[in-house]
Amino acid sequence: MSTYILGMDIGTSSVKASLWDVEKERVVSQFIDNYPISFDINGRICQDPEVIYQVILQLLENIIDDLEARAGNNRHKFVTVVLDTALHTLLLLDEQMNPMSDVIPWMDTRADSVALEILKSEQNAEIHERTGCPVDSVYPLYKIIWFARNNADLLKQAGKISSIKDYLLYKFTGRFVLDFSTASGSGCLDIRKRCWAEDLLWDLARVDLSKFPVLISSYEVLEPSEEIKRLFKGRNVYVNFAVGISDAAASSIGTTCFDHNTLTISMGTSAAIRKISPEPLKKSNALGHGMWCYIVDENSYIIGMAMRSGGCIIDWWVKNFLKSCDYDEIVRVLGDMTNYDSSPIRTTRPIFIPTIYGERVPRWIPNRNGALLGLSGATSIDEATQSIIEGIGFNFRRIFEAVETYFGRVEAASYNVVATGGMCQIQNWLHFLSNLFNRSMIIRESRFDTSLGLIMFYLKEKAPVIFELMSAKKDVISPKKSLSGLLENLYLKWLNEIESMEERLCKIHDIT
Image (cartoon, rainbow, N blue to C red; front, side, top):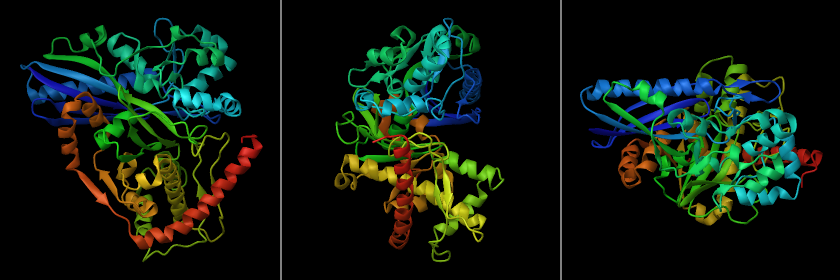
């Protein structure tokens, strides 16, 4: 019998999978597929859970087909699927476990008014300390409260309150369970007691624990459902499912191999800067602001900050203003930006505030809109594009410095910095960030770091072997001191503008 581990990374808009041959100690195949997201003008965003399930199910079938073609149909094959999903999703189910709502992902802003009310209350710091999640409408907790206030009948009729993770686990295994890692990104879990925050859920939304999944170990392996058994009936393959962790935890493991002295910059649709830590969030000035803390496993946490202004902003600019379907113009302008000798910095260029979809850092503030400041009749599309890129990069630097400050600037200066995610594929983007941060960066060339992180998590004793295989595909980018100095003044000018806007918004909303 041949044994395989399949790491399946189920992100916001795509699923990526890596198949590991346990005996030969190598990746034998990798797959990717996409599913849609729907936006409306009211800030409500949704996804069809059945579409996501069918895409993943078809991908799983394709992987098994490919495996049988490679390994032969006569040899028995044992495949353990290890799952992660994107954090902060909400899905309401009926008593028969059928969806009553769409999947509501992290980007949805319907609960802004709820989060603002709690942000201004005395519960702000308590919720942050207990759950590890700063008050922010991104978390399912606030969307549950929104339903309690705006569609109480639907919430009352819901048999279960789910995320995409526990829904998929139910579809795959017939059990309504969830790992602590994914649960810790809901705002509903007491991360120190490692149980649902029952009193908060009842006080804030009048929901009880009977609606929530049973919390179990990420390493627990579940038998397949009858549907999965029928799908692979007659084949020489047996598939079961390890509960797994969150995509944030898997990404951190995949890029650091559990190293506590490495900062990971993860850049996809959204973005985050985080570090694995043996301890949960400290009582410090981080409470009440945007620093979060989620569980990785029984012995570790990830602490960091996330921003909404990642690759989604570049997609927005490319599609709506460059009227294109690719990144050719972005790549060309980035090339000029990383060669300032031939394209000198102009201080008159517009300043871009990248909060098009709101923002979570340095803390969440409602009703944040983006801005392109300083436009004139002489502004060219290239200059505007350069401003867009710089604004996104400046936001990265701001949260990088916030995370460094939490861990101690002197200590953090010795940490390795690893960059990963889809934005790393944009040519010259990381050269720009390296110059902006004035830090060297280790670059992972693989788009499958997170799915490989799942395999490393499940095969923890073999993690160094897998990581060494990944490390053969890394690169190191170092800053040019002259460019770092030139970018410093632009960054400080940008920082002054965004802080002034945040100060005005805080006064409008009476946030201290």
